[in-house]
Image (cartoon, rainbow, N blue to C red; front, side, top):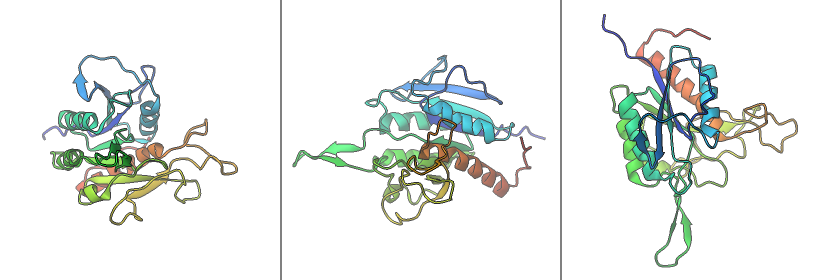
Length: 249
């Protein structure tokens, strides 16, 4: 019988703390130079965000699942849609993950109007080439599913105008411990904007009495709801494909 490829979940984020000790096989890829792969680079996570996302996945995924972690640029001026698209395309083609967790948003979500010279907000992943990369990811041999955090309040939402036809894209919304959408959690803008793909606990709103965070320090965010939906998407994908049940940890 032919060997089946390992099941993989990928994370494209701010990197991974070198002290992090995973419970599984883990591959680290550095895209911190404008989204271009830099080989033989030691793990790093200047922000700490990616490490938290990976920790959630490492805690809840079956041990058979491999993790692939890609580090994006930390400098906000370099963490653009273009650099993210470069990194996403390379990671998907190189690792062929079953699901990729995307809990970050590029900073180039404004442009200056050439006539009125005002700063105008635009959807986070407005350039169509990013949506093209997401579509191509879904057409790999693994039919990679992308789970994208919909963003937090104060951020311009991801665009349903561009992404509504991508069947392999899941937009993640954060809910509080009561099962309601958290006020800090953003949503997609465009057709059917009142709908969202799925939601999971991302931490209570911090002003709620007895608020519970996604971590013991009380932190919350849509970013931390996405990993739970990444795991759910993987399990749903396995069940649909008839893959044998994985062990439980």
